[in-house]
Image (cartoon, rainbow, N blue to C red; front, top):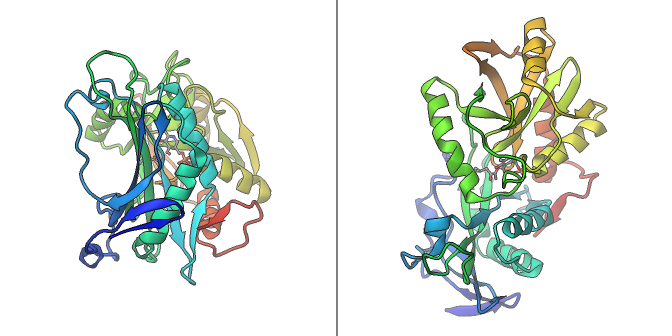
Length: 354
Ligand code: PLP
Ligand code: COI
């Protein structure tokens, strides 16, 4: 049956799959809700979004996504509090970043209201899928891809915007071991590293497989020029604590402007933690590890939240991080998740009620 909600046509699923889901043992991004939002770009404009049952998408073999990788995506989460209110975290930042990414790879920008109204309507419809088990949330994946056809290596004339959602548990199951990469690069000046473009992730898989063969979960990307500066940790921004100062690199063409990163920086300052946004070299990190001044390293991102790093490998040596009684990672993770799940005041105005 079709209905119209918030001006969006909703084609409801005939039955729900929710009873088949084990909400106590959720993996990350493996099961999907009953509905998805779909919005098409044709004849030079975005058409009104529709909600339909979650289902496969049919594409022509010449669709440009397959050949030229024209796709961008976002990662967000919806949280439920004890009263069953639904919350998003800084969703307009994701909406804006999707368009920043789209622009860089010649995808037409999506109107804000299609993103926000579409997302809210979808969440209201599938609200029962937002987990309430500790540490779980509904991972939201908005993405745009080139559905237009043809082998000509030029931007497509048709695109599809989809929002799919997956009730999810933790991204990493424990602490993360990372390898400092000195050969491969994730991004370059003038490149697409600052965009959430699908191809950025494909390019990371092979070096990450090589690191996994050596026992590491993630690669720490360094600058593509001389591999001197610490830049990102896979799909996370990276934070380093030397003595009591929390350091993260400045965003650039090569580094994604992470929403978790900028929120962590503000919370840390609010906690009175000394923060520095500056370039940090691999040699400074190694020196700090050798002299015992390196206290913590952690990755920050929507999927991974705040993920402590237990050791880093560099040129054949592993450097273990100390076990701390109380860490910045723990404190900052608690503060950000307390805001996200509406367990504490939100002095920053980041929480967004659906
Ligand atoms: N860096 C990269 C390359 C990412 O893919 C992500 C994930 O979104 C992040 C950093 C963290 O960004 P955010 O905190 O906005 O999720
Ligand atoms: C996110 O943190 O939301 C991301 O997009 C990371 C993802 C590649 C799993």
